[in-house]
Image (cartoon, rainbow, N blue to C red; front, side, top):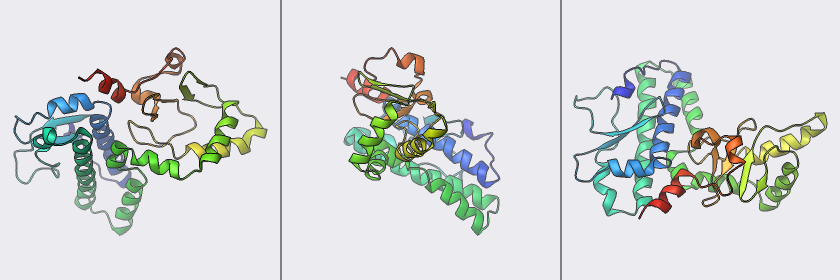
Length: 254
């Protein structure tokens, strides 16, 4: 595909960056851009595949014509099942196959450029530290993160963190930003980082970092990087009820 023409990773770090870019593109298709993805997967068309590119973009297209193709191909014919399943089940099925495809592409590069046992293990561990696309799409990643901390600890830590954060919890709006701390706040910082470290972005599926702006959807209660949903801290201050792209699309859809 056109988006792959410039991709030729040769080191473990380069292959991992390639993996993350493709993964981010597919997650966008199955979450943020789900309405457009649904529209493009017309069952009346020929066998279609979902491609993710290193540039964090996605594309629904026909499979490569050459046999064998330059890279492993995604699952074929994802459009045919679109109207025969519940949307959430169809998206979950595409997510599972996309996870398998991403691993195939990553280890294709590993084989092509002669990664040894140590490199293959390191690459797998780097990939395995990220939640799968399936976990992000189905909400399992968020559920697993919640199970790691008890409800009592979460409540206690949240109340402590509110007094230190530049963001606020008001009118259903909660933003995570850089914190103003002095030397006496080191213990609180570690406590907050431990609590929020398992929080995952509903768009890209990556972990919370204390130096990033986050916002929570008031409907599905998923957290998002501000950059992933194009919301700035200044804009968030004027939003009374934030609805993520997926929830906005659901409400608009007949």
